[in-house]
Image (cartoon, rainbow, N blue to C red; front, side, top):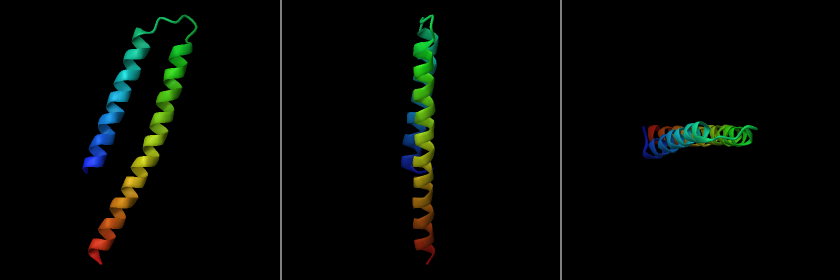
Length: 68
């Protein structure tokens, strides 16, 4: 696991923990905060998948160059 991957995994874990705590603590009766946090977390996960894919492609390119 590369340093960038470890950092990204740590950020995702922290975001997940923060979102879970926000959902537990929130006392909104109309669920607006819960919906906003859920949407934000979904966007975060989607963005992180794209970044991980980019890191994966970068690593594959480096490996390919190293083998040549």
